[in-house]
Length: 116
Image 1 (tube, rainbow, N blue to C red):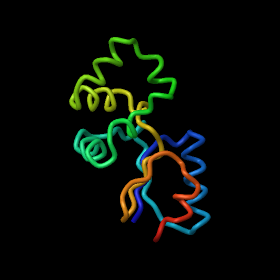
Image 2: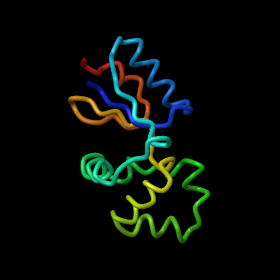
Image 3: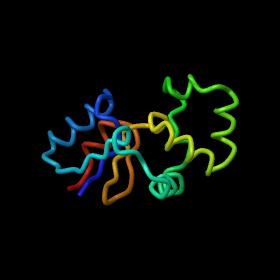
C-alpha cells in the first residue's frame, strides 16, 4: 500500500490526494504535524532521498529560522533530524512511499505513472 506523509492543509498535499483518488489508489496518510515523525523514518529518507530533497528551504518555516538555526540544522545529520522533528513543516511535502521508491513534492507526471 502507498503511504503519503505531509500536512493535511497544504495545497501540494491536496493535489496529491486528488491524483491518488483519481487513479483509485488506496493509501495510508501520515500527518506529521499531528502525529509527528520519528528519527528512524527521517534517517531512511535522508539516506534514500537526500537532505537537499527532504529539507524544504523554500518554505516560510525555513526562512523564519535564524541564520544560526539554519547553520546548525545543516551542520550534521543529527542536527537536521532534530530540526525536522521539532518543526515538521521543514520537510518538503508530500513524501509518497511507493513500491518503486519515493516521490517528494507533487509531480503530476510522476503521480500518473504510479503503479498500484
